[in-house]
Image (cartoon, rainbow, N blue to C red; front, side, top):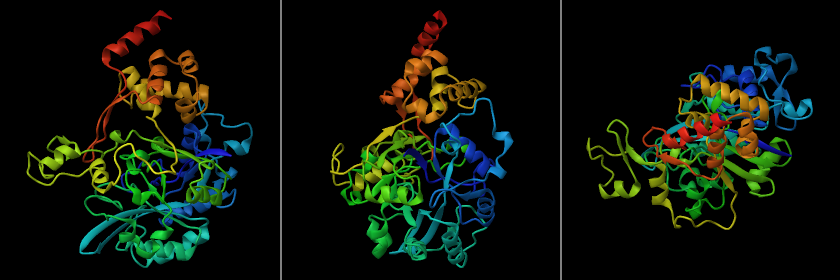
Length: 434
């Protein structure tokens, strides 16, 4: 079965998240996006775990679905998609997942590593939570901060169940990742030691894509996956994974471990330049630099004379042992996409949060069932027929990578431009003729 999965999100119990990050809204937005399997996120938080147990029931092995008795009528809208020909095809599946922030000292340096745990059942989750609860306060945040070596976290998860998956999150984020410039390591083995052989995958994060990661041969043995790390329902699926395998926890995890291109079809990626940490810089100083420029000034901000925040591109460039464009023999394909709301906003020359964008988004979903179907499959002539010439052209350009992005840096998202103002005006004039 072909389906899209987003395995890393957060609940309303994590800091800086929307209060709508609950089961009902996630179920709704997964349908809108075209996501079949979504990670629950935050299974370590006691209140979120209680909600998961209350509202979900078993589906296929290791997956869960919303109980019929808990379906919320407020989520039924006249523009909601009709995904699938039968009831079961429409139902979102949930997979138990959580992200842990490990802050500790190793090899004379402070380490700050974010790690995703996937678990096959509630019994396993409860055992993991019991062990982690001895170490730190799981109630304080949906993504708990623990004074725990990432290797010990892997040990706890894998000793609880060999079916758990331990996945380093957003591999190169400067402050909180396995290979981050400020607090990470230079190899899997340095971090996870004897448990590194059980690390089968790493998450690219919004500021890198597979092609960037292919430059480093040390990663050839792991699978590169992509997830949204969403903090609000509308952001789920901004990165995701496309599988063609059994709809089950074992089906998904085995597809990841095997890197079988017949089962793990592709990842869906941000244009990495749009990510918050692509280039180096200082946001407060309004300084954004390429790795080459940063190295010339020894990574020191030319304005405040303090160390720059070293971005993902720079970090990969330091670790890489291949030239740009080179890649290993075995890879999983990928596509770059821009969220539909951003395409509409650029095409219309308005803000993403505007009423114009919201109404056009609803119109397109109503006609074509899901965002991913619109971005990946629907003929742009059909899109033009129910929407506008400029939106159809915007989707076409994104599919072909014909966009301009002012790269993100030091926590600042990159700025995307699909149309020049004059182009947009011309499309509007053309549309008025019809």
